[in-house]
Length: 138
Image (cartoon, rainbow, N blue to C red):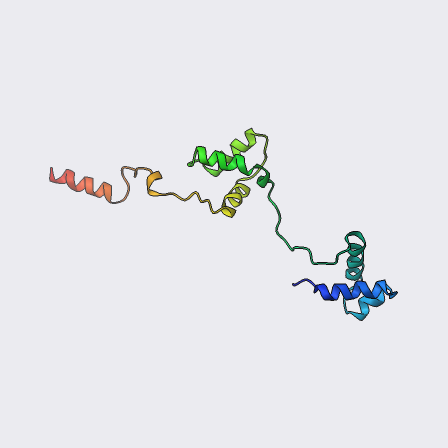
């Protein structure tokens, strides 16, 4: 749903300022009475009827961005749970998903790369059959 245009908002406010009741102005411009009342209240408080931004909540972690980025710079292999624990140690309560979204907004990922891969376990996959074949040859 898109917000009403600034022009429509301005016309409703001007009609009320010219002496039309809020209800009559709302009916004339085909908007709800509550919408017209809210536009008038905003105009009286701020002098503007401009559209406010829609959505876009702000994470509380943004206030601690330097700390989070410093933790990852010091230890790039920290898990999200370890980052949450470090933040709790600094009296910052958060969740793993909030920390993940914080880093996602900055384009920082925690995907495994070849330098961080663990050694393969000994009896898995081709390795076990290969050892059995070598043992049979010996």
